[in-house]
Image (cartoon, rainbow, N blue to C red):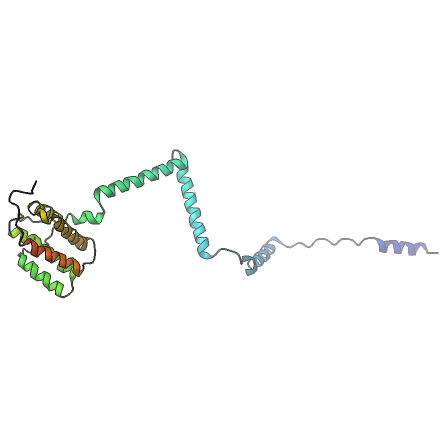
Length: 226
């Protein structure tokens, strides 16, 4: 027969062991450990690149800006879109009416920019520039030769500050058969002088031909033909 002491010992062995108290870690070390763990490359393989993150930030900023603007505009988003459309239309109308700033500037400057010289002097300078391949200067001097020649022949009244466009329009009244060529020459002069367009040998050849043609053209004495 088992003794009472043995029975008690055997029963105690069958009881579940006492649970140990949970292990606790202070807050700061736990946070640092978590940060170290999350900083491992394993967790960032699918992260967007630097450019993508920058674009995301930019579009987020644009979206916030749009939201604030639409909230402050009568009619919300629809009102903001309507205002933007009106602004675009207004700018387009001004551009169509006034032209580009560069083109506006060309209409304020005269053909001649220095001391008074004869048409022959301008032709000599033009040919010298052409021989050296300086096509911009060659075209400019040949256009000046055209205008000065018309003044010397009294087709145009000498007038300081006359622009290439004005000279072409005034000369066309007496030389209607050459009106289009004169307008083209004026546009070429403006484009290379004020519009930074590179001149070419072909441009110079057209202006030289026009200059020589106009020297033999007989102007109308009573204005353009009806």
